[in-house]
Length: 125
Image (cartoon, rainbow, N blue to C red):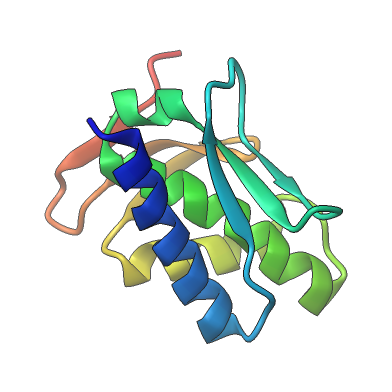
């Protein structure tokens, strides 16, 4: 899989969401991270782990949407966390792209499906 192409696609995804929400665009970096990605408010950027691609491109999109939602909820609602305000934004944007999270474990969903029930991601632990 061409990671540069995927990085371009998820940048376009982030740009679209930022434009629709009326917030400043964020820069996406697809990186070789061992753990989770991160929203960097100081540099207005997001790190997405390359390992997300091992699951599916849809999971990488969902991961990107998750991180962009931090940039929506923090300035608009002065909220920096993964509670109800954040989750409602995340689910709104996932649904727009035909992605449906099921069962959450703290901040992240355990399973991601299409409207038809196709599984894009299922947490193994």
